[in-house]
Length: 397
Image (cartoon, rainbow, N blue to C red; front, top):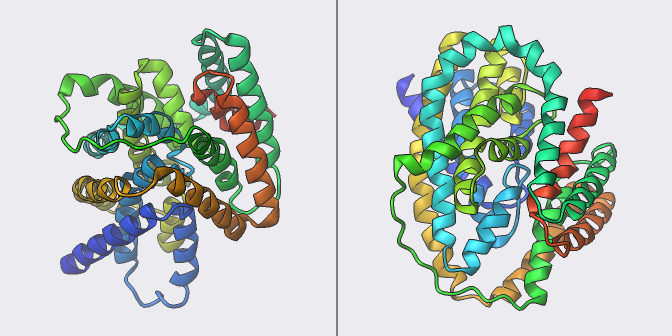
């Protein structure tokens, strides 16, 4: 069985690398495909191997997914915020630095996940109801902090409310993969179109990265540890909301914010497995797929999943380092304006495939909204109103 587990882990890392590199392929899509295949083609495979495959794929995807998000401006539902500082660093010749910061956040997060699994298991049941009741008020407080942290407070409030209204209507449409056109428009194509208009040129990239000191990691990791449990255990909350909450806790600069993002995505994914064990709630597509395979999770399977997360996280760290160098070598040889045009076309095509004509209309409206918000000269994290406000209303109504 050990050989089968190792093989399943390695295949999961390989598939997670591929899905992470392809914009628009989210863990939820992969999980849904596995659920349908598990009753037919994969029926004769030991469920333990499938669980290991899913866990390793999910963790690897969260590491690799930052590469197309930062280098190509193609966000996933969990990496949209990485575009903001990541693209700026890419234009300054620090694209490799940006990616490695997310990778360092991720590798430390899997270590923290292993350490904190038992404490989270012990405290989740007693505090779950209290946390659930507190979430909307925490998020309202976060919104006010975001607005009052800006010099242009009216513009910040306008962006938060405008994107919140857009997000509320989009998420209540009967639309497949509704987050993809919404987030791709607000955070992806809007930025790409601005780069095309400004004729942005990508300078030679610095491929040296100085290892981050533990002291430098403390604040972003603290923010991730505080915010991620809220999103890993509760419906309607994801990595983007956790990153915004964590940033309000730790008050980070743009570089440290990338460390926070890398850590948050890994912790939210890992905590969704703990949530499945402790309160039988699924918070990610990977957790849904595992629940469909085994029903109720026991402690032995949870320990196996956490070990798989740790090993696949270590492997993914080095894969991210290797692949990002290859990407940078390629980007330096390409006309970035032409690349941006092709990426807008590619995103448009992916939206049509995944969400249809209605999704494409959402994509156009979201893109126009994103361009308008960028021109108001406030922090682009204000556009997270598209998720924060619908989540607040979900809990209050």
